[in-house]
Length: 331
Ligand SMILES: [Zn+2]
Image (cartoon, rainbow, N blue to C red; front, side, top):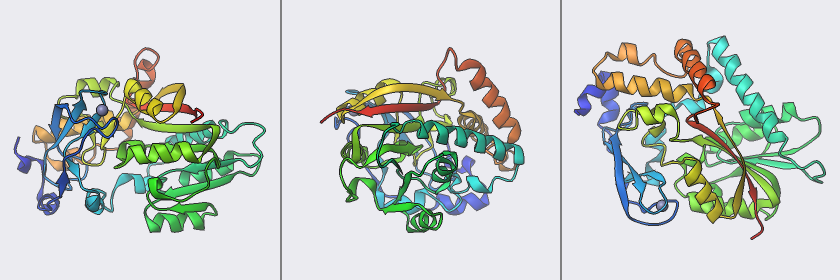
């Protein structure tokens, strides 16, 4: 495939940017043997025209990006318009309300994970990207809870403090914090972006109280959209920002290695990946950007249609959005 077909003039500016890449062993188990699943492009932001290989570890089955961008390239692969930073600016009232409803259900779910008799209840949102989820947890709670946000971005740290929460700045694997401190640690659409998943899970185990809870939401390659578009276009690949793609089996193995046992697994609708998968296909087929650029998380028709598909099928088939509730085991 020619990379020129991916872009219009505006995107060509991004395509000329080179990105430094590095070869890595499996971030889950450290082994170096893999098979290539697909090579795909950054269809979401066109940050580079390098094709990225998604590979499957032959030892633990984890999907990961190899080679992947170097950590020093992080500002290039997360452009200013990156959607995770802009969910609060969604204009369509129906999409905004639906998203707020889903997020507030999540906040209630997280709140219920705090043990009833915890003396100093505390929750940490790792790599939170904004204080939005912490605010929903605060609103949902009937009693005071210590709420902490962690991020490496100083602007986000400032927003967390401004919203009245405690902030822990820096890459989570390197932060200095009291061991056995938190009741619940949240990784909401974060673990798939991590450069050092080993360091982060080790740190999580240390900072949780005994039998504390790890709440994870992350893409899963078990969804029907993942199966249909596996060979190139699946939106969940989201290269080069998703460095790891789990499923129930691989996350179970990975968490076990770091002293966690899974208590509960849930699958939620993932209309965004359905939409971006079809969009990626149409981009490659050469449809004009004036059409394909409308196919995103702000498009109400796409969001509603694919939400209905996932809701109707999730009782007998997993979706591409997996929620894991795991318990810390004694070290
Ligand atoms: Zn592995």
